[in-house]
Image (tube, rainbow, N blue to C red; front, side):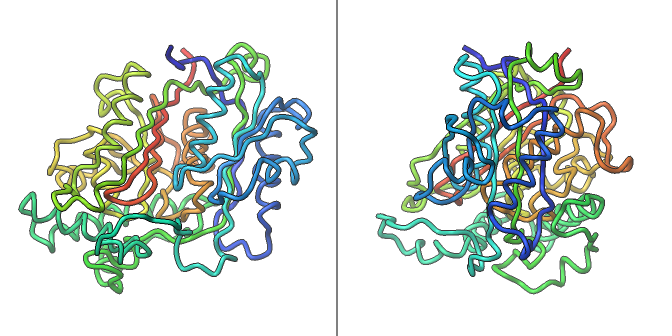
Length: 395
């Protein structure tokens, strides 16, 4: 049974993302949740259940119930790497659609700057024996391998390929420069990106998203109840979830440029929402641009262009704010950073505001956006999970 139009988002909140040294993990939860309560016009006592997404396998739902003083309602902690926030929304929506609860909270949060880590938390207990695991703690190295393989496979001159990636970065930083909640609010030039220090060739400093603190929250209910709260509620149309077996990291024939998890998740999301031509029917996309090459390959994985042809659309400005299909209109992970559990919910927050015509600045507001697609991808090439959600306004 399709989930289409069986769940509605009536309120959302999002903290300022960045180096929130003066703010605790619990403070971020409260900040995001209370903005969502106010936006929805509800109190915490109206909630039947809650889901919280963040990267820690030893914590329970008390992580949400404690700071929000939720009184013995059902609260669940979910985790799915970089898709943990989207997993919270997915679980919350399925529970509402099943009739188990009427009003729920889905929240994603992460406090990375205080962790002392230079990157994301890494999983333990990996059981594969393969030299490529030497780069397990170096995500840029994995994505750099995808970039160089992409250039080679499609006969792209490396200098030109790096220009494609730089244009994606410039686009996202320009979009983020206008968003008051982004970690980085400064546009960058092609020259700055192209001449930046190399992290793992061809990825330079500006091709990589920062680690960040932040939280975002959504209030989810049924469409029937939503009508009592507001006219511009946002309907959930579909989800697509695909998890790989992780065998790409031991497969010497692994195709670094073809990410099956994204393609399978997209097929399921499109089928659930009745989308036949995503490039024409989707009005805006928030995708997982942890590295610039990730965004380029996700264009193709989502079926927005033919494989090997994404660079032509980058040159044409197809995915820019005023282009045919705006991608990451809020600046994406490049500008917001990547508080792992929060990123998926933050993407939906941007779609929600754009659909309502309530982007914080007029120059950011898209004209009559259609459906919005949020894409969250976790892991690394060879071992991905991917969750895609499509949302839209009621007819």
